[in-house]
Length: 325
Image (cartoon, rainbow, N blue to C red; front, side, top):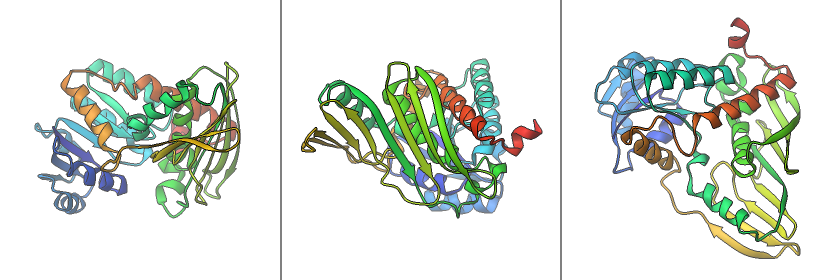
């Protein structure tokens, strides 16, 4: 399948590096706001074409799927452009700035009958099903809670610190903690409580989120843009606990009993980078004429956006783009 990349930043570099190692993919074109940057990117990663505008990329008749790698604040406009040009879209997380934008994208996707999906890679990885199989096996008995953390020192990144780019911890890394909890505990939520520390620029820097589910389970998530955490996800059961190493790209799943003895360890299969799984699933869906991903349907993307809207409402965090509207 011939794939185009919209935006040539750091995320696009990792994605392109993956594509060039996939036999099923042809790197068709890359687009940036400046032609020079697009040409440099295309040459480095082996793309046939380079475009100095996103409109030109969408107008390329050869492209069968476009990956969007721009800041969160631009996702809605970029997806709208692609969908109106009838180009299937795989858009980087967070899907949009808020749930209203996500719902409008869903409606436009339905109207134009164009495939659209969020590229949150952990939803597509084999590790997702491996973790769930261990939970469902009952090896640690009834699970009452999970904790998950994801923190990186990323204050040097402009898109993290600037409100006009929809910055902050939540939309960039908090989205992984939320998806981790929802993938394994579901979406039947009773209430959500949180606490936050803001940056001087007005975005969220550190947060603790507690989700109470109607079945009695609880998920406690923490995110931070100042320090590096162990990134573990832990499920607490009556017969022991399960530790997932790195919720952002699981490497192994270990099961311990109540005496802290390791009773089972499962390694995740080797991969190119982890991005290949979302590419392969989206390619299959596009070829089958489907409009959504099985692993990350638009309804799930909207649910996550609604939760993040609720959290930002608790914190009083409104992005400039939303204030203008």
